Image (cartoon, rainbow, N blue to C red; front, side, top):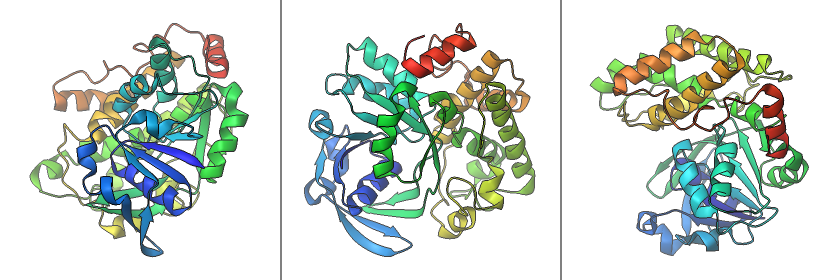
Length: 357
């Protein structure tokens, strides 16, 4: 399959290496060509996983967005949520009918990016899909991509939902772990980052600021923090129930206690790898700038709209705002900022199904 991979972080490099290794024709794009380094000429990444180390040859490495997405059946954008709308503006002149755009995870970026595309004059009939996590637990070390674990379950919603059949046919050819769920809001409410990371960084604020490197998933994950994480996840699941979403809610406790979560039995392998012992600048890291400012703020806005009390999510958001000396609830990824807070539930269902409220 022809797959465009957009972005320059851990997830984008993992996508480029892993999908190339599987035999797909990958076009790897990032905005700043100079930051590709030697990859721009070698077009090769070293891939390390449980099977060992091997070289992955990438079909195209480019800073020309039009070349990357031309005739691509699938466009994969594993970037932080705060980059999505800029990428949508850049994509607007280049998209074609029938293309599928996958956001792992999305943070309701499917709707935000479609809004941006339409404002930019793009009329292409595309489908967005979003899920709750990256398909890989991964870190980039120079020119080597270390994949600790691949997701075994990716609950995924499509926007608009009336394009789901076509979108899932494409997605499942590249990611067999994809599991169809109701719609894009259901997918956004599977996002694990705003549940895992806020308690970990806020309750580890002292060690993160004191030590040069700290593993929030190892010694930073203690029983008291786990109890907070579980309680926060209960609020997420309460929102899903209030909105009528049925089936599995993928409780985060399964990540720690069983093999039923998105990565299977992954937590021990994650901590054993050592790849997450890292330097985190609390106010600048994407756990704050994405998972809290976008993800947790979005979750609280949906709860407010749905009439669900989320005191813990609201409290963590207030605490993070105090640490950053700014109101993280007042971002552009809330229902209010997206102009959707005035919709009633029937209007939201129409929007999610057809793309029009």
